[in-house]
Structure formats: C-alpha cells, structure tokens
Amino acid sequence: MQLECEHKDDCQVNFKVVIPKEQIVSKYEKELNAVLARVELPGFRAGKAPKNMVASRFSHKIEKETIQKLISEACAEGMKQHDLQPIALPVIDNIQYKDREELSFTALIEVKPRIEFEDYRNMPLIKKIVEVKDEDIESQLQHLQNEYATLVDVDDNRAAMYGDVAIVDFEYTVDGITQNKENSLIEIGKDTALPEFEERLAGLRVGEGATFTLTIPENFVNPDIAGKDATFKVKMNELKQKHFPAIDDEFAKDMGEYETIDDVKVAIRNELVNMNEATAQNVLKGKIIEKLLERCDFSLPKTLVKKETEILVEEFLLYLQGQGIQPPEEVMANESLTQKFQPRAEKKLKSLLILEHIALKENIAVSKEEYKNWIFTDFRGDAEKIREYLSDEEKMDMKMHEMLIDKILNFLLDVADIKIEMVSQLE
Image (cartoon, rainbow, N blue to C red; front, side):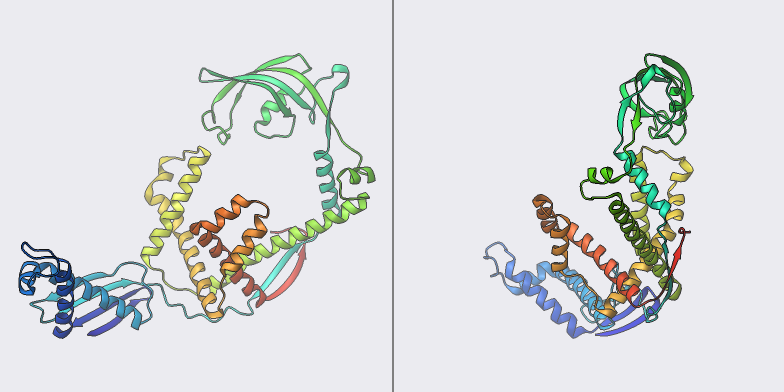
C-alpha cells in the first residue's frame, strides 16, 4: 500500500492512498470465505454451497464490503503510522476502482492539533492573599450574634420599625388574579425580595392593615408577575424584635466548642485565613490558565469547536429555563448565541488540550484508588452515595477528569515562580 500524508493545517490531514491488486484480491477472498461459511442456499446446508455459486450470487455485495474495509483499514494504518488522533470520521473522496486491479482514494481527516510546548515551568505569578483584619472578625461575630438571636414580642404596641420581624397576612392581585399568604414572617429592612413592600410595613401596629399598589421589578424572582403592577392588602398579626445575646464567654460556651470568646475569635481568624488562602489559590489557577494561553497558541478543529459551542448554548438555555427567564428573541437567535459562546468554547478547548499535553509530558494521572479514596472521604457514612459513585461510570469519568485537571494545575503551581502579596481586598 502507498500512503502519502499531507498536513493541510494544525487540524487537518489529507491521505492519498493507493492499494495494489494483490491486497485487494487477498481481502476479497477473505470476505468471500466469510460469506461462504455462513450463507444458506437452496439445496445446501450452511457453509456447504459451492464457492463459485456464492461468488456469482454475492459478488457485488462482497466487492462493496471489501472496498469499505480496505478504506477503513488504510485510514487506521495511516493514523497509526503518523501518530494522529482523529476527532471525526474521515471524509473519503476521489475513489478510483475497477475490476479488483487497483484502489485509490483520498481521505481528509480532522485531528487533534499537535502541541509542542515546553515553556510551562517557572511561570511568574503573584498570589494576592486578603489580609484578615480585626473588623472582619467583629463582622463574623455580629453575624453569629444574629444567628443566635431570639424573637421576643414588641412591648407597648409600638409601630413597626426597621429591624423588626413582622408576621403578616397579605394578598396581592395582578392582572385580576389574587394570591393569598398567611402568617408570613418578614424582617423589615432586610431587602430579601421586595424592599418597597417591607417599607410599607414600617409604621403599622399589630391589628392594623394597609392597601397599596407597587410595580414589581423586572428582575423579580417570579417571572409571571415581573414588571407588572400588584395591589397588596396587608394585615399585621404580630410584631417581634430580635434579642441579641451578649458577645461574652457565656456566648462562646453556648456555641458548644469554646470556653472563652477569645477562643471563638481565634477560630474565626483561622477560618478566614484558610478561606482567603483557598480563594487566592483558586484565583491563581485561573491566572495560570491565562498564562498558558498566552504562551501556547494553535488552531482548533472546527468539529470540536462546533460541538463545544453547542454544549455551552444548551447549558445556557437549560439555566434560563430553570430560572423561568425568557430573553428577547434577538438574544435567543441561533447565530447570536453561537457568536456569544464560541469564544468561550475555544478558550475552554485550548485550555483542556494544553493541560492534557502537560499531563502526558509529566505522567500526571488519577488512579481508581484515588477516586475511591475521594468517595469514601466525601461520602463517609452515606452508603447509598458510595454505592452510586462506585457503580456509575459516567459519574466516575466526570469526577476523575475534574480531579485530573486539579492535579495538573497544582503541579503547575508547584513549579511556578510565585510571589506572595498581602492585600486589603481582591481586585
């Protein structure tokens, strides 16, 4: 067999193949014998029909099968010889064949790009870690104080104020349809969903009611009423205020793990330090990806880009559907979404291909044992989850891929030139 290989670009290879008569005849005989062994003809048991009769009756089918298999085997052999990784089926063209004399054809194949990249060690990086300040610890203590607060009845039937917790019945009417809510607990001024509604509660006393109309914000959580006018009728059933515990040693003991409030402050500081370190590390992983993309550029196969773009678009549409959001038609147009997500798809693919290249160069891999250790650590005591992740191959592949990416990034950080800078806040 003669095979010429021409690289049209980083991602396309063209084979010119000529298969001689001897190889064709040998393959044809092999296919004929395979048919002969299983075919049943009238008057003959399976495998006992005369060879010339089988050849005469099935010649066209055998010849077609012979050509298809020779083409497939030639392409496979060419990819093996030239160490190519195809990402789509070959496009076969210019087939020339006559009477088992000679077979020639061309095959255009999309392949993974060849990445020749060594410059991934000693990359200069600045790791910015947010410094933990005393006010950060005080803020966390206040958060804990709020978490441990109790609700007590308001004295002297005073009017509701910001910070109070109101228990109300209310109904609202939109487009002639009325909905009711009973004994809803609302913290006035917390701005959880509809700040204007909370504002109207301020000033009411227990037993009093109010009627008012508000325009629901366009980005409201319920898309059915977003942007519309709603008429509310509200009745104040109860009014409570928060009673905050003193931040002292007794408060520390109530939390169950500490003897003094200083112990709590030390624990909060350590937790914030660890959180800021983890955040800085994750930011650094993003930066190292950007550095890799700056240092190594290459073309991507169109098929891969198209497929990854379609996946990102589908994920986006599923997200919108889950949020009940219906964007304008011009945003949802196929071309518009493709233009929006294709650059992201290209960046993601290039990042993954570079990381895959580094993993091969450095023999970085994730073993089944590491995967099992993750399962038993993450789902300790949850037998159902452990069984699920041990038996589900799709979950295993996805998690092992995630673990591999993390392992490669950690390796790159280990061999990077990192300078640490303490900052008051991240940019």
